[in-house]
Length: 89
Image (tube, rainbow, N blue to C red; front, side):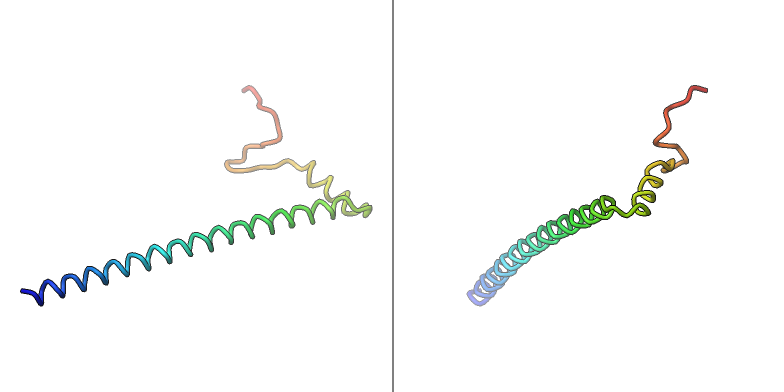
């Protein structure tokens, strides 16, 4: 009986150690995810700033391409034009 109680205590202690390790690894994973998302956001902001810098240059071809892209009608999902006003049928 004492041997079974000792084995039970040993297994409970081992289970508690595993729970602690899982909690620690989960915390580390959350930190890594947070850092990854922060880095991704920084890279996206840098990319957007770089695009804005390219458009702001004095190169007339780039400026013309940017203006053309802005003037084009945009169609998203189902063929509905997002730039055009609503029409009554």
